[in-house]
Amino acid sequence: MSDLLLRNTRLVGRDGRPTDVLVEDGVVSAIVEGLEPGGAEVVDLDGRYLAPGLWDNHVHIEQWALVRQRLDVSRAASAAEAVTLVRRRITEGRSADRDLLVGYGFRDALWPDAPTASLLDAAGAIPVALVSGDLHAVWLNSAGLALVGAPDHATGFLREQAAFDANTTITAIDSSRIDEWVAEAGRAAAARGVVGVVDLEMTLSLDAWVARIAAGADSLRVRAGVYPRDLDGVIARGLRTGDVIPGGDGLVTMGPAKIITDGSLNTRTAYCHDPYAIGGGVGVPTFTFDELVALVRRASGAGLVPAVHAIGDHANSLALDVFEEVGCAGSIEHAQLIRPADVARFARLGVVASVQPEHAMDDRDIADAYWSGRTSRAFPLESLAAAGVTLRLGSDAPVSPLDPWIAMAAAVTRSRDGRESWHPEQRVPAAVALEASADGRSSVLQGSVADLVVLESDPLAAGTDLRAMSVAATLLAGRFTHRAL
Image (cartoon, rainbow, N blue to C red; front, side, top):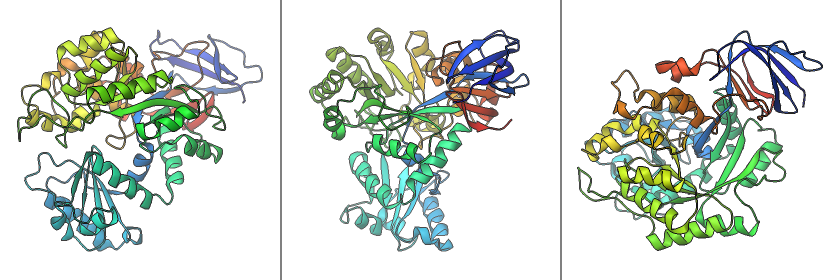
C-alpha cells in the first residue's frame, strides 16, 4: 500500500484553513500544513474539502444492482398506467425479458384502481413481476404467478412474506450477471463518496462478498447481516458482529442480525397503535412479543447485534419493549412513526435509530392520507437527535437510491422537487446528517482510518445543493476507489 500526501485541503467541520494530510499504511498519520512527502505520492487538492468517507447503513445490494437493470414503473400514477409501461416494454421485444420481465418502484397506496393479475395480463403473455418501491409487495400476471409457484392466487398481488418468497424466486431467475452488476453498483457508490455499506440482503451474502472481492470488486467495505433463517448457521460458524471474514481482504465483516417486526406504510401493513385513516386496520405484526424476545435473545447472546425492522408506532413500541426485556443494545431500522414517550426510550435504552430520510419524501402524501393527524411524529429525526439518540442514515436501496447525499439532503431540508418542507420542525443540521452518514465521524482526525471523500464544496454549507454534491475522489484505506481530479 503506497503512502499519500494530500496537499492544500480544507477539513470539513474544522476552521476551513488549508492544510496537508499524510496517509501512511491506510491511516491518517499527520494533519499539518507544510508536510514533507518523503516517499509518499503527492496529490494537490487545490483547496477542495476533505471529509470522512460515507456509509449507507441499510441497503439490499443485490436488489439495488438488479433494479439498475429493470423496468422503472415508479412514475405510474395508477395500475392502468403501470400496465401501459409494461406493454410498451414488451412491444420493444427485448430478448432479456422473454423468460421474465421485472419492473420496480410502484407505490399503489394512492392509486385509483386496483392492481390485479388480470389487468396485468392485458399487457402481454410473457411472465411479468412488478416489485413495489418498498419491496413489501409484488404484483404478477398469470404467467408470473405460475413462475413463482402461486398459480391459484386470487389477485396476483402478493404482500409481506409471500412477496419476499416470490422476490427470492424472481431474483434467482433475473440474476445471471449479479456479481458483475454488484461490482458496477459498488463503483457507482464509490463515485458518490461511499466507502461502506450495511448489506441487509435477505439471503446471507458473506461468502458471496468474499468471492466478489477476490474477483476485484473491492470498492466498498461491507457489513453483511443475517436473517432468522440463517441465524443458526452463522452462530455455528462462531461469527459475531464485527468479526472480519477470512478471504475478504479485510473489507467484509459480520453485520447485525436483522429481524422484521411489521410491514410498510405503502403496503398498509406497518403495525400501528391506531387504525389507518383510509381502510382501517392497524397493520400486521410479524411476531409475538415472546417470539421476538426469543429471537433477539438468541442473536444477542451469540454476539450478534440485533437490527429490528419497525415502521409503525406499535411496532416501534414493541421493539423497544423487547430490547428492554432482553437488556441488550441494537438498532431499530426505519423508525418511521414513533410516539413521543418512545423517543425518550430510544435514548434511555441506547437503541440506535437507523433511518432513511428520503422515505419521508417518497411517502409524505401517503403518510398524510393514511396517518392523518399523526405525521408530526413521522420520521421524527430532530426529536430523536434532540433526545440524544444515535442516528445512522441509509437508503434502504433499492427503495431509495444508494446515495448518502440524497439521504442527507432529505434530513436537512425535508424537501424535494421544489415542494415546501414537510414538517420542517423535524429537520436536522447538516453536521448531524453528515456524522450519521459517516459512521459516527464528524471530521477527519489523525489516527483514523483513511476512508475519505474529497468534495468540491463544503457540505455543511450546501443546503439544498446537497443532493448534487460533487465528489472529486473517494479513498478506501488511502486507496483511490474513485478519482476525478
